[in-house]
Each structure stands twice: as structure tokens, then as C-alpha cells.
Image (tube, rainbow, N blue to C red; front, side, top):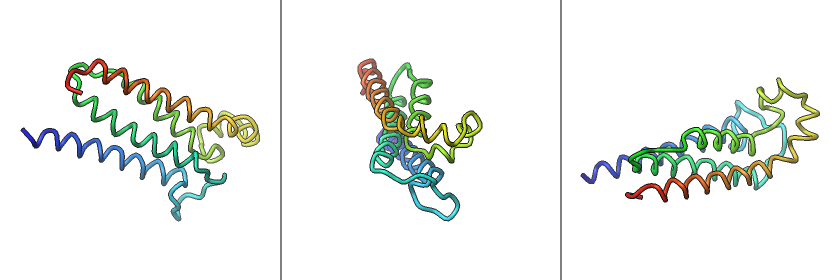
Length: 137
């Protein structure tokens, strides 16, 4: 019986570490020779990267304990919002296709910290709601 909780913890830790490494590398927050970040790194970027990774890990763990898991779409939206909060707006191909780089730097870049704060509130609210509904948690 003790193997099951350990497997849950390992899975959630793997999700957290994997998302940290994947998102950190593709956004240039973790320096690498493949990807060069076009805007400066800020402490808020690292905060939102860590928060997104921790949220993903905790969500996966809580989801594995719940009888009726909920919030998958909201969690996916929160991860996307987190990615947009710490990702380089110029290097994001989807945003660049929709908007010009000057529009992204003028209008979107100043809003990234606000998006990150909203994302944190969504994460906390979802985890709190999920925990209240879970009897095992």
C-alpha cells in the first residue's frame, strides 16, 4: 500500500520538474544554446515559472486523490496563462502571428506581471476548491 502514495508523489514531482525544465528552456529563463530570450529576465518571470511548475505538480497530486477530479480545463488555462506571464512576448510565435512585435512590446509586455498575478489567484482558488471537495486530501 505504501507504493501507491510514493508513486503519486513521484508522478507529481516529475510533472513539476518537467514543466519547470521544459518551460524554462523554451522561454530562455534557463540559459541554453538553442533559445535566446529577446527581453530581459526579471525576478517576476522566475517567480511565475516556479509558481506554474509547483501548481502543476500539486494539481496532479490532488487530482490523483480525488474521487471526482475537477478543474482540468481551468488548470490547463492557468498553465497557459502562466506561460504567457513569464514567456518572452516577442519569441512567442502564436502571439507574434496575431499581433506585431511593437504591439506586443507596447501593450502586452507591461501586462505580463498582472497576468501572472491573475494566474496565481486562479491556481490558489482552484487548489483550494479542489481540496475542499476532496475528503482524502
